[in-house]
Image 1 (cartoon, rainbow, N blue to C red):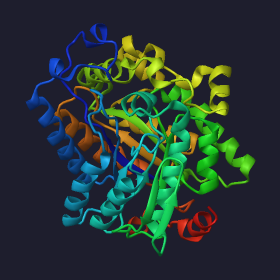
Image 2 (cartoon, rainbow, N blue to C red):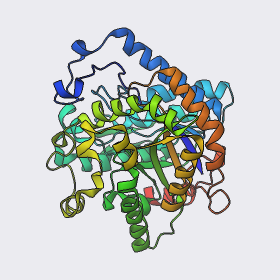
Image 3 (cartoon, helix red, strand yellow):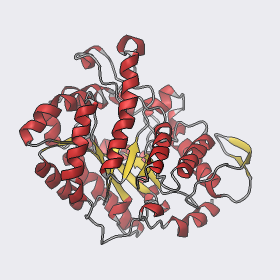
Image 4 (tube, helix red, strand yellow):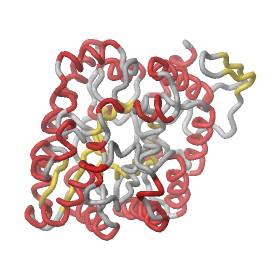
Length: 421
């Protein structure tokens, strides 16, 4: 399997009583809360941590996008991935650059996104993995003013324009509902043609799964809600959708983000990581009220049917703001313990759920750089070697760059798909 290092850039110095004094982590007044030196060190440390992981043997560097928030200050993952593309190329490190969160539901400049990611693919000489979520409601609809009912339609149109702009042989006009261009003639184009591997991140909506399977995209799911509460539901649903479409189920088409903490013993892991884990969930995702994540009009009817029928897809979400470390660990929001404990749980989970790409989140909340490096080093030496052989000889990886050992099926299908649009 492929194992990537998953990076966010949180502000690590929020007050102890932050979640009790502030309505949310996405409306926090910046100047009342931050110190410039802390913000600067957060970005420097994040890039250092990515390079530590790249040198330690991870298969890729996965970076998210959460603008206007204290729990993740990355407004555009392409900025960090561009820097990493250059350094990893200079050091000849075989890692994928995976900007997993370039949200297209809010984007008003899709061609800028296409250009940025084409540039990353050129700098890295063919190591880009493109990630395009629809985007979170508070960001798309509140921060960027996109009407909720337009979010999904804007995502669909933007994605098709980007894919076409990457491989159309001649300049073409584009007359969409949300953007119009007299001539589209992208420079540069991705090294990987007709396009790099494309992944979509979703929350379990069957429509998103159907979209990924029918278009031969990878499907990402993030495990913050608790893998022990939601994993079975989500991945069994993906299998059911695949079966309904007559598509073969290949673990490498599935990506899963899991928070992980490794120390010498289970007790030591709880002692040194517990406070940072509680910080992340209480002051981060847990401090985003439901009404800011799900604005009326932003989820299609099939997704709403699933939510109203059974809200269990959201696992621990409603309790996160006050959850203890042990509640978060027991729900699977984090896998924490000795190397043996962590690898046993990860191996079992990946095989059981059919996960071929694990995005390991090893820095979260207030965790300082030194402790993050300890977590990365121990994971890389004691856990990673036990994960990589999983599924390696049983399936081809069609959603990974060819330069890094992937066997993209995209070359056989993408032009036909995009020509048919």
